[in-house]
Length: 217
Image 1 (spheres, one colour):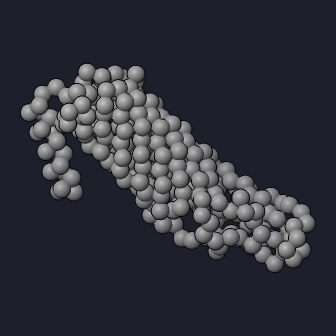
Image 2 (image 1 turned 45 degrees about the vertical axis):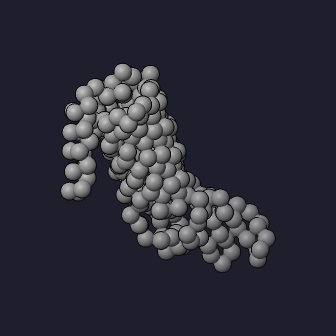
Image 3 (image 1 turned 60 degrees about the horizontal axis):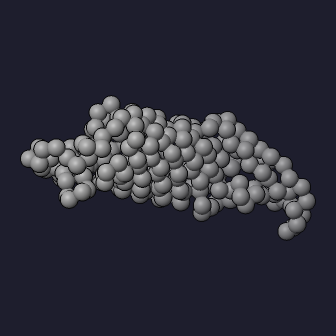
């Protein structure tokens, strides 16, 4: 925390010494962006966002996106049934209201560098449905479905990183963390009296890396 504070103060002091930043010339109130992320929960995220920049250091807005598990860590099954392969990897659409915070920038030729933070709240669809394969040995004989509207649908997250603006275009790269439990809704599913909760891992703390591409217009 002390190192981060020192870095913020260093960039702020350098910005004041340089006066106007290159990014000031291209400042507008409208910022569109696309963000991709990979996480320690074996998920990827993709979101499209718009923020209204109230000030060159502060923006408010939100995004719409999708997250998806790409590596299964457990599988719900019984003596004559199992969850479908595709449905065993949870995913969900979400809305994410968020705030953009940027430090004063320091210029390196045509690039304006600043610290970047974007805290937000991820609002997932509070519903999950899974397909069940009924089996006779290895042969699938029929299908059934289970669903729930229970489980975690709201998660808090934050993106922290370095932002670089080149004219009206920019990108930020860094670290993200979240309390999202990707198996939360699956733990509330059951079939033939068998709860899915025992098949999936406990809720880990989600971390990851993200990349955001933005455009000011």
